Image 1: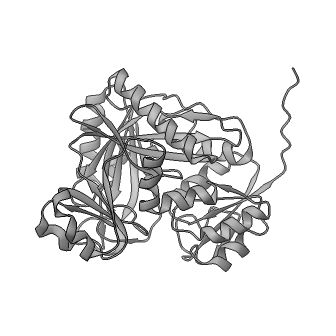
Image 2: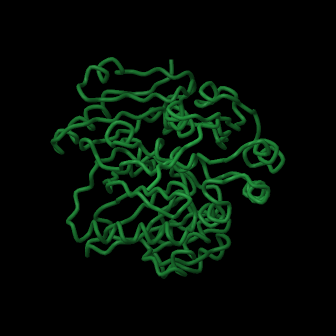
Length: 383
């Protein structure tokens, strides 16, 4: 059997969006023969200085995305809110898009995403599609529920918990989905890579702990503490999601486990994801390395864990807006087996993702202890 020969031609790959996900993707790109380009409106964004070519432009604008992509071999995204019509046209002209525009269109609209789960018999919470606040007011019998705006929600924005009819005013006067509230025992994320041949590589499931006020990932533990039976169920459901999405790329499937150990898909992200940041240090092939393998046509990497890990998100402190100052950074840098990632954002504001810290340890209790220590030590404040 002959060996596969890889021709090291420098492919040109573009990233739509220049935030921290783009930054970490570019940090992994240096290991491969690839020329990188970033399209982003902010010329001082976290990814701007790490790419070969930076283009200032609006990722939601057809002409900006189309003109950016015309000379590229491939394009990927770091946020869903991009102009998929331009991506569809580029795809017709031979540019490889990760994920496919049709898949992106399904996922970026919460209504289409929920209907996709229902159509493909993927377990998800019951839901009602609503077009406006008046319509939402007619579904009080469905409460308690969670109202999600169909388009534009991100990082906790565009989500409101509606427990009683008195909370209806918190909902969105725009198309959205009202999802029946699940009694959650655990929130789990699974990241799966899919190459152009349809082959998959699945990362160990992780436990996600959310900040109830900001609805952002507070910290996370890998691997998740699950019985084999529940883990197998989670992996089977997550694999079914990506199989039916029918696209190469990397996908983060977020799931709930309820009090009866039933599993429901919450949401899917068609890109590298916050729940996979620990893979940079904790797994043989990180989610960022894996996406480059998919885009460049290399074999899928090894998803196995090197050590258990915890991630702590570093968020802008309440009451602080302005030039960012990292209080307690020196103390955190002294912690053994802690890896600090600052995203290079000059300005902080309450709840803004400014960085993360990954901790490695064989002892789960030690991970929880260190995560809480870091959370209370490292603060992003304004000068």
